[in-house]
Image (cartoon, rainbow, N blue to C red; front, side):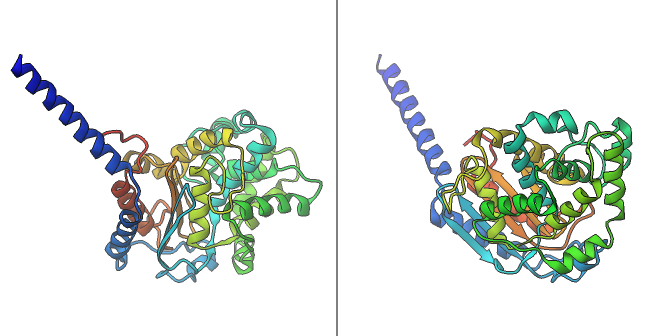
Length: 338
């Protein structure tokens, strides 16, 4: 009997220790967050890997040494390291927020029924992927799907459509953002492939009309300037069920956020999305301007800007820093071991 009591006490004590460990691991204290950001920043500050995107001439000229980290919790606390003021063009990260706008406008099925939500297995600007299924089996985070998504934004003319997109981005970031005109002009002068992609999507019936207007608006949205703080708040808004945790404004419908995050998880880092999800479990989106946003649902959003990219078009420093910080803070939603 005494032996059974000893075992029972041991089990109760063990359970209490495990519960205490879980609480401790799950608690995102200010000190723990600051330490995680500082360690990641210092660890990769002198990393010399990757190179700026150069297929858009203006991107090749961006300062390669820009390196900023921002983490924003769902209760609105903002933590920073490094350069959080320098702006880069948002590029493909913009696709997430135009997708959110169209979901609010038309519901989640519109994108599924038009171009799909599957990872293509091809590079982000692939024409082969379009031809394979005549513009179906795409997703809103590759160029064909993104231009199509932009074409779905309601508006009687260019100005009204652009106004809705710009306002959506402003509300996600919590401030008024502006287009980097040098990037827009450079990208518009070299976007022949995107025009061809849009023409094919129009030919296969996914873009109703004005595919060149959709391409130009898409080019403009990619040229919006953001800093690491902007992107961190935008990511945290998704982590907080569509409510900006800094401004307390409900920006996008909470019911659509699971679908937004699902597409980010499966297609957010171009054709390396699977590797990223395997490593971190975090829905994320990168842009060739050098930014990456990642979302730990219900916990925090994180963003890093560092222009040098790997062969897949993803920031080298940003991937490493986000992975380290998330691991330190228990950000992986699939990891229930602690």
